Image 1 (cartoon, rainbow, N blue to C red):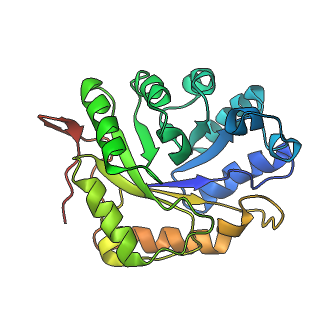
Image 2: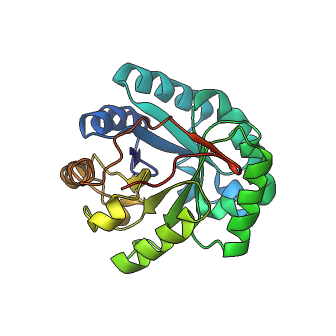
Image 3: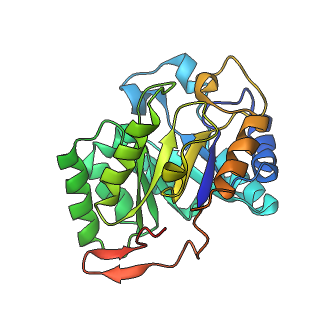
Length: 256
């Protein structure tokens, strides 16, 4: 299993970002993720309160070096084709947010980099997911993981709804996971055993005035989440990079 600590907007100054890297490593995350955007990319016009969370490219380069020093994977979500082109050399794995997963041109741009790609499916119709899978089949060298996601902040989905969504994604023959916007630290064994990736909003410095604070975990709760996931009796223990070749591409089948 890959556990991603999503820092997002949980910072007030650039020094907070570096601190978050080391904290995520200490708290058991496999990767720490940031965001690269401007308000104009998100909404089509400038919004000062949004742009204050813009992380410049040179700062992302420094955070990449910090992650290397800490021994944790650096990840970053962009929100435009240009953004993905600019961060491509910094990441080993691309992540596409639910809002951008609707843009087939952007999805195609990201898959064309032929790097492992994690894609959130919040708000996507079954037909749209199927189109993405068809595109993935064409680009066979890309490893794809689909994340179930409730695109509400914070999420209050029932466990049965989450399980149903994850099982639906498994039918596409790819690794699946959860992009979680709740403040839960544990789900049923049935859910945890199916998660190859979990992305969780992470607020290690305990800010209460940031846009992501209301659906993020502090350090104690994040550690509890990691412990629950690692101790799950159906926890993935095999090599996360090992893939099985099938007629539709490369994926790891779900096993109990």
